[in-house]
Length: 323
Image 1: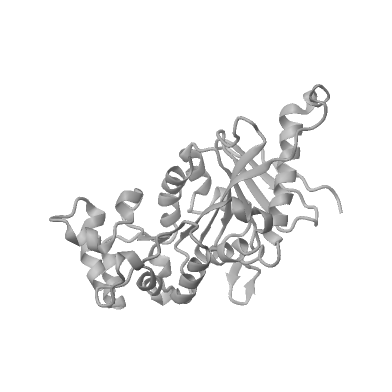
Image 2 (image 1 turned 60 degrees about the horizontal axis):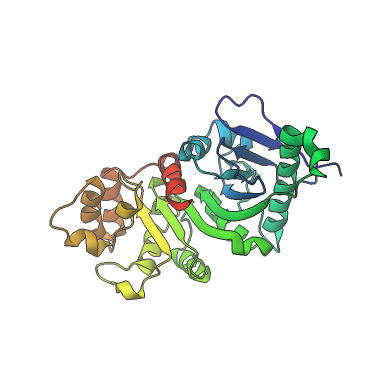
């Protein structure tokens, strides 16, 4: 097995640096790394990493970085935060009879820890040969491998399962996990998502949902909502709610946490809505016990489609979560 190397993509027309893994078979997954201009801390030894799990319809990581409508590189760049984006390639769902997609590709044992070790080692080597190769002798040898100070794990669409499986396989990086972010990814049983959220023991979990997780697409957003916040017919007192889960519909105004994550009671208690987001929530929150009516109404009122959930909200999430 040859050396694992990250190679700069010179065709990148945007800011920052795009790196792709070489073809060596030792990589746990083919990988893309994006280092924005603000990506390194002053010490160049500890880094903040955003581990991203893409959805079904991504041919490869270059497609994810340059062509997918999620526009994740733009979001990272515009956040102007010290964060490095790491994206494993999870396979491609072309159709039901032709798919290699596996959102849980980093799950099992300590596989995510091993994967991150591979990426950090290759990233450190790239940094040395690109920026300080001529200074190694003066430094008394190469610097230590980069270390993760803060880890954020996020996913879109089917990548939600990647969040779940990778968190369980973090090994020694578990204490570096700061938050998880899900973008239109609440497929399957809402009760299962609730049980997983409870098991995270207070790690902040942010979820935004759009049209891609409506019931017709096997989403169970409202099943999760009912267990986290309750409904008008089955309320959960504020004292009994999970304080670490933040769930919001992707509407205009969701960009700001102080707007997006208001409770239904707080919004309804206001004399009048203060913005478009509150106006829509006042219409749809009373419908939470009627999923058919809820979904038809919130879509008519401007719920974002599947890809804009990421394109419009990833940047604001980075800005508000990272120091």
